[in-house]
Image (cartoon, rainbow, N blue to C red; front, side, top):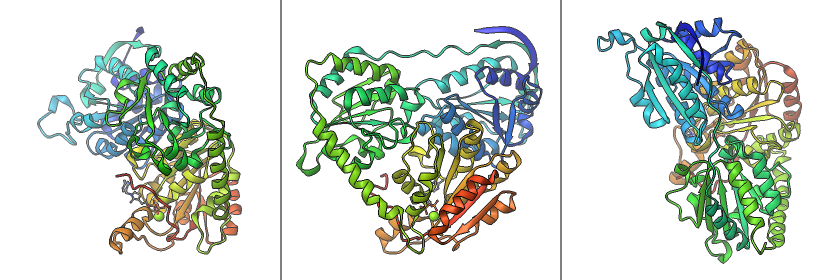
Length: 552
Ligand SMILES: Cc1ncc(C[n+]2csc(CCOP(=O)(O)OP(=O)(O)O)c2C)c(N)n1
Ligand SMILES: [Mg+2]
């Protein structure tokens, strides 16, 4: 649908449409090929914020994180050639995580194509494998429609990135176009028979477990998911953006007993996340002589249902409709099994894990054990805190020790596992959740990939608390190499680098901590600082995360 017709250049068309889709910010790094986007942002009513960063990866990571947090596709604007290629890893991360994202690239002018103008690169073939759609918009008159479609496609299940580039001559050109008004979101009904079958499997299960993943949040099904957990009485494990859907401390949250839950379950129902390495490729059960578990996969769209796992049942559609439909189908089952003993056993497992964790969380070890940082941080986090992980072992410890109390506040790199997303995600979090605590957890290795964008936090007055777990190593690679070869190379970083001094040099604040008793007070100063502030905690390189899988 379109409303009214207005004259403008290509950038104006793109900005009108982005604003109509709810956008108030573009993430970018300057280049003449995309000047029309800036001119349009400056003159828009109200103006669109231009959040200019120091590396295009940060721009795209920020737009991806904005998409994850707000559930409206984020917008990154990249200049032609190296601007676009610098953004490719972050686009790929969005593809792997199903994050709604629109990337608009500049492009060398069509009227000189083939003559060797600056940065003349045909981007879509590079982007095509890592996006839902990647194409060139050739005419100024097509920009509004193409951008409207890009936002719609990026936001439709299964979500992901869309890439468009616009030749410079078309971008600067003028046309009169109607302004598209975004189509209403359509919800796909799941197949009723498929839900009946899943309900039958649940009614016949003795030890069911529910797994909730990122798409539960992305699809807006967090309330339905909690209703399902509470009405059906199925214990749940959460991962990705679904962490917090079942709040930390909730009696049905058994993430801390996931080894027993997955190992002894006879029916695992996985919702909104792929059956990948994080979930043992969809093989569960078999612990202590138990039979293999049956597996049900519920996804936001048919192409997300696992092709490799052997499934007892599956369904796809809008995840609220799926989960509410399942509650009703379960109510129609003649027998509802009694899962009390199973749930109680898992709750005992959770209580035992919580008790075991206490020792590490309070560790007085010197050098500092990374767990102690979370012993200090977790009690200081408000319910609406946004916690971002960018690193190896340091972030794995966070996954173990930080249990969010609300959904949509946990940002990890997802299955693509790309280091360097941290500063971009922190920028987006600060903008999307203006009054919430924003905490960025950085491995020292990861910190090196995006720390220069503290400059962006400072220039745009975006206070963020950064905590660097500084073990002077690429820890998550050092330990496996030791295990495999008995030695390691390319794994050590300079000892005790003062990343806090880097932040201070860029206009923020920070301090280095070597005494476990000083972590808490340093965090209090960081939260009170009102500026970007990095607490650089020197940790024990030998305190490796106890890992069951390396993801292959
Ligand atoms: C872009 C990118 N490069 C390399 C890797 C491989 N990798 C995964 S974890 C890791 C080590 C991270 O080190 P650090 O951030 O210091 O965290 P630590 O494990 O030491 O706590 C590396 C190099 C990756 N995941 N992403
Ligand atoms: Mg490290």
